Image (cartoon, rainbow, N blue to C red; front, side, top):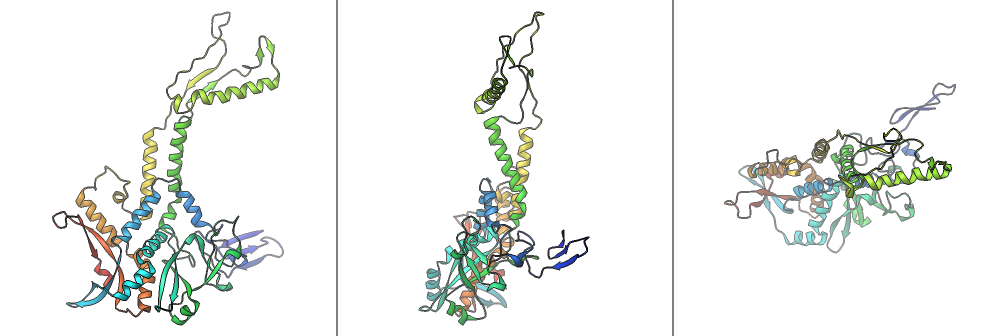
Length: 428
């Protein structure tokens, strides 16, 4: 018998004559991590989830959800705003300010690395699963590194005791098709050893916020809303099935047990009786369920006995539905608000709080500015991290990449109703 005391501490053969204590020295992610027996894992990479498919599990959860993907795209757009530009730090009146910087070499590098596409891809990975894997490729002719984003679904961290680095395999998350022979192993980018990165030609860096108990993979806050997403999905599925088959149990069908036992006064064979019950049950679905049978009338014929009273027959009793549509709608609305909160979007901006105030033009402008200024800086920090490292390696130590925010204005200030600005707090 094995008793687990903690993630890394076990009692073996508890209560027996040869009881022993076992402490595991390896480490694992506390949330969405792999097996506690990680050091016995045959894989040369760190599992992402117990089935090494956590991103796939969460993606399957939102495939049939009506709002999660849209909210993630809204958050992506809030982070991206007007895109990324280059800015030079300057001291004006004793304060550090960012001034837009234009340089032909930087323009060429941005073109070579397809900078805006890299930024959008990095943001997408960030909001989807909170891990950005960047591939650095050295160009000896230009003496710079171009950047590209690796798909997190296909990327894993190499086990430190087996060489480390990063592993890329198109079948991570698909155990049926995964084979180690398809894995490409890439060295980790070393920010302190430029020559090493040049020799390797291609290296990989991992940008993530460091969560307590997560030595390997981070996870986004919306993953913690898994049950709220499941609840919203179930309500949608319930309404779909309700339209197709009829909501809840709407009728109680009462029949004599021997209803099909006789025919013309003779007993019927047991197999035929069973078949008749089966056929009748199947017919009930076509008679009483489905969108074509709403408010349909059912006619039942019955016999009268010698006393003039109705003989036992099929008795259809309508049942009252105590669960109203309003009750389901409230649960659905609450689930969607929980999902929006978990993603980090204000409910009004997320569109899950209609008709409850706070939706005038001026209020939306204030909320949009708040969302961009106070709910995006950490996301932007990790998206820009590798870009600014690449600039530094090119010798631009007083130049940095920064996002140009969208500031909603009145039409008399700007005829388009919006203008691009840079958050000067980034210069601190």
